[in-house]
Image (tube, rainbow, N blue to C red; front, side, top):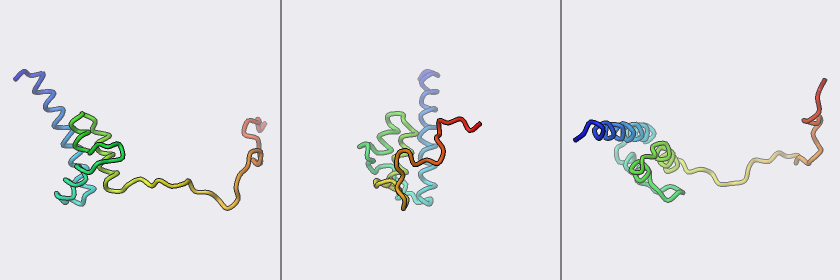
Length: 97
């Protein structure tokens, strides 16, 4: 095996290890929960394992986080008094001086 290939393999192992280590921590050090979070399919249609195989470690970690705690899909918070255009007390484009 060439040294370039060994280096590439080492890089990939480090990427996978970092993601799995972090997922293991959010799974409260439970190996079966870690496995579940890594294999659960996210909204993108990929699991963390799929994304690790594609060398996308950041997206893999986010997919595992989404499996742990799905993102809320709801309306944004609204105050009691609704804002309307022109209701600002000071024009933001106006120079205060």
